Length: 158
Image (tube, rainbow, N blue to C red):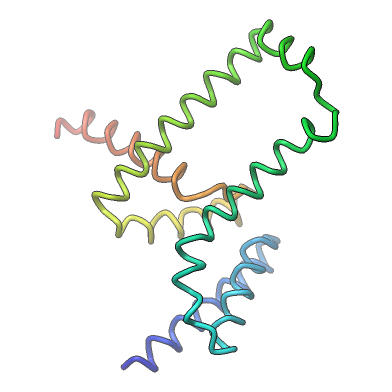
């Protein structure tokens, strides 16, 4: 039975590679290729580490890319201060705070119902391929899901 499950996982990864190529999503195709290579090279012992630390590593590189303008000197202190003297700057501040709050709610939701990860992953793939979205992580998706879940419960009287 384990062989069938392994083969199913490999077939799903091949399917994701094809979907990524057809949908012009190099991130999905590359991620599926890397994971397929890990499996085919019998390096599956590293999968738990990738699962556990992959999100952190991804967020690290995302944060690095966002902070490069500060490090390169493209954004200086006067521009930083000026950003908070405008309404778009304040909206960005509020947006960042709301996003952090939603991420926390998403984490709470994932702790309550870890099976939601499957829907979040499939929904993210759908959004990447068909809506030309960018995957930024399951926490934001879970946060949005948590808000939608609360709205649904309020509207349905539950």
